[in-house]
Length: 281
Image 1 (tube, rainbow, N blue to C red):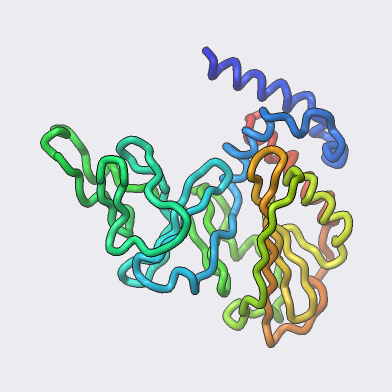
Image 2 (cartoon, helix red, strand yellow):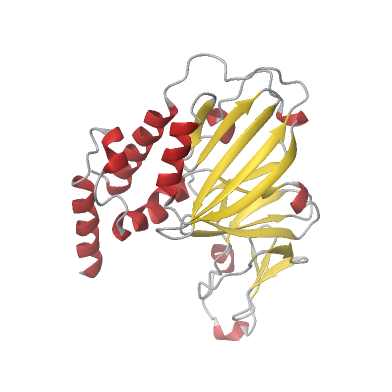
């Protein structure tokens, strides 16, 4: 019953927003409510591509980085054959987190709670005290695999199985070559502002060469450089902002080729549609 009441409350709050006029959402009362923030964390951000780290930091078998995409805990790990995989970072036994931060887990991911052992491909390899599990289906209890994409030196994850391929979403000019791209700088800061406020402010001030990529990710072209900004909500009032500068020696253009929609309007249209989709209105 509590779940039904919560769903009804979320639906009511969404219906009270001016969804037919996305730009009016910028100043809509209630947009920073805990209910809507919870919806963003559970339904909107986990359906987006998210920057996780660099391929260079995941160079050796067993190298991993753990993160959250919205409310979804994920771990990206380098396999024994050199492949990168994104896996659910939740043990399929008692839902404990398997990994934290970044490092090298060796040959397996091991749950610190009851010692369940998972291979770097997510398969459940070992269950201590197996005699206590008479009807366990070991093959069915592996870690769910999520979608990954590597763009130049950058690694991205998307928990949604229905998301479009990252390469199809990225609005880059033909003169930009990901195979030649290198990272110049990577800065991380925590800001005492809601994530949507920061994105809105950025798009108002820096819209000239900016094209929307994801709900929480935009990029700006500056000649041979590409500046990427990723806004990761810490809580309803705080945001972790990552700024990445890449360079491609063969690139020449200062802006994206061809006409593009106003990024500010495009972002709020995408946000409004995401709310509608998440609540099945």
